[in-house]
Amino acid sequence: MLVQGSWAIGQINGANPDFESKCGVFSFPAIEGGADPNRMIVKTDNLVMSSTTKNQDACIALMKCFTDETAQKYTAEVGGKIPVIDVKYDESKAPAQLGYVMDILSKSTGTFGFYNESLASVEAGDCFDNAMVDLFLGSVTPEEAFATVQKFYEENVYNK
Image (tube, rainbow, N blue to C red; front, side):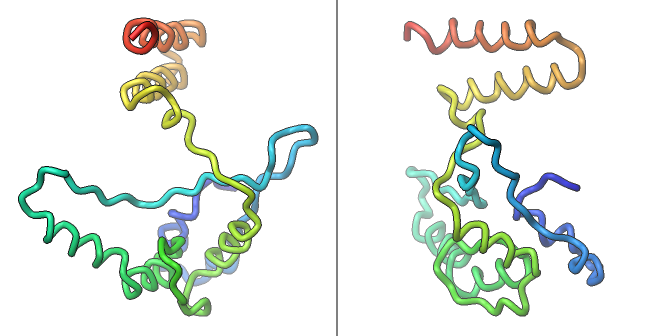
């Protein structure tokens, strides 16, 4: 079992057509008394444009290329990724796993984000991520990792 998101379907299948039939997708099972199991982290690739760019028209044209029907059909049929627009794609051309993902998505009751992205700032998320890496690597104790995050909040978030 590999815990991964739908963004990995194309890479997982790769050039091995036999693998697709052996690989499925499922939601984590519900835990009695736990949170709603039908909520999903729903993310996609992002394109951004600076508000001060001198080339706004070119940036917008590029964004439209990535988000038009042709690109999004390709995204679904070849990459196995969730299209970002409501586009009809040939399900028989798309990886089978995308069908499983779309079925789960159709039953979704809401979304939630990654924990580090819900923190006070990008920098707070970075501090948390770095503390978790240090904890994973065994270079700090849990108490030390969270003391680092606490110190960041005291110096940069609280009382500001």
